[in-house]
Length: 211
Image (cartoon, rainbow, N blue to C red):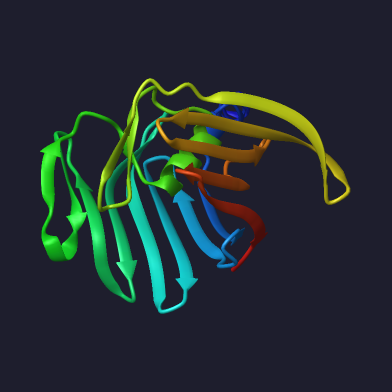
């Protein structure tokens, strides 16, 4: 029995870190001076992202959830909620995707590509260290296909809080969109997200963990 206990403990220690349960509450600062509060959970079978952004006249919440596989977050539902009311959403089944502004009704199309929102895409990269070669991003209102994507990855040593850490940067470009995600080695959440489109930049940078 003692041998079996030791063997079981050893096997547990080799379970890939991608299957470790995570529950983060993170505050990000932004280049628009409006912080984002992101609650990310993943337990090996399900994941969810709840991102709250307070801007003048709007309390915006981006909600996404889905299943978790050994290599990918598979989103099944995304909502853009403004002042407590659904503004836009995406519903994903194994074969179709519904999306659009709620007031205009939803369009239905065949599901041909894995689908992420911006936050799920950033956590996919920082959690799994990879993206599908082709996928699409949705903001609820529209779909943005990103095909034959090549993610460039580089590492460098930086000083953070008086300690040397390895910063990992992921970048890729598709059409008029440039995306950058950064994390520290050994971590599974993004410390920096940058989304550029037609010369406009939207940046989020890790500020602190919050309760």
